[in-house]
Length: 183
Image (tube, rainbow, N blue to C red):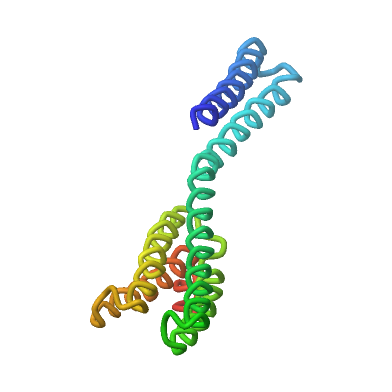
């Protein structure tokens, strides 16, 4: 991250140096000089280049954080799917009743819905994917514990709330909720 800040600072310094050089050339010319208009245009062009670059800086600074959010959400989805598969295997081996395989299939279908909901997060909204990943992690742990009877039955509210919250956060991060509200 420090390298990125240094790179941005260096680029801004170079663009500012171009403005300074263009301004020095402009100061050395008389307004009646035929080269004055070209020097002024160079100054304006250098200023515009700096403004355009500075407009891109927030997105460049946010990019590493966006990648972390996306990776954490993807890992949580894979873990969620793996827990569903293991739940199916446990039901197949007879460790738990066969009805749990139905929940595992629903969980796998839900994982694909979560995946599509969390695609392409909007700028500034990617951190919600981290919260969605945490909620999926809680649900992924709670369901097998419920299936094996470690947790009491009323704890079913926990994975249900986690699934609803994770889907809502992922949808909001990608802007799906806002798009549907506008339609």
